[in-house]
Image (tube, rainbow, N blue to C red; front, top):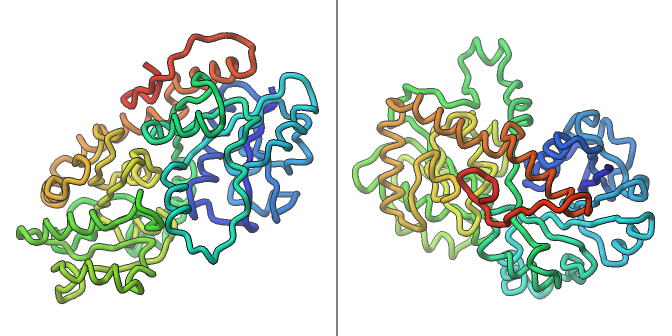
Length: 404
């Protein structure tokens, strides 16, 4: 079977790390190839074929074609990184019998729609939304969107409940490994320069904390993480810097400054609070991180968390779907987060082996090495295409990344 996964490339050789969408598509492609199907990316954008020297991945391992060149040969279309209109669905289905379209949703649409509707400047003109198609066959969404979005998608897409479901979350270290390889050369190693892997033994007063939230919406921004570091500092804790990635524009906002000016971490001398631009994960981890401090609302599976765990960094976080890894605190409990941060700063080096084993166990459940994950996707595809009728629950189990 031919399966196409849509993407939209903004420019040639665009970094994979500017957002998670292309990574979602590539990870899904790799997993679905394990089911035995012919899987490829479909692009319709300003970047045109041939793609070999225009994308940041191996096009033999992750094939990519122009949408209009391959859509007729495609049996199952997964709209992930690019969405089209209902007329496009109908045109696609006219090219053969039993053609199906799945919308694969990676973001928190309820919150994204709320923020865009309420807070976007009225002077900005948006095209009419084509995201809630009425001709789509199914909606698959990443499991962290269950609570806010399952019914939201069902009603807006006008689908029966059985056609709207969470699917196993997919992550892979392939691109982290590729980027990390840049650091493993004599020039770096001989000079003992920082590497993108946690290195025990640094004095607490020299440790750097880092926040990786994108700071473009309320679901993932850094302020509670900053307050966790503040709370720890106020109870006698010590560290060198708190680095806010994706944060360089924040200090330009007077209202934001009016909040954080009440903290000691903002006022202390020498400076402990540093605001940095967005950058590749491995570079940020190598140069600006000893411990990651994270906070989210309604997004308890994030690639940045899994990346940090894979590279063995202490992760202080409130993601309940990862509570069996890292240093977990619940909800918005800043005090609990500060206590977990204290443990990560002051005791982590005594627990490195135990910590890394827990991380490995957790990470495996999101990769192709989780045989149940591949089997589940194979059954989902067969159900969608009417090949077999597998009786599959849609109740997601975060501890296995499968269904109960």
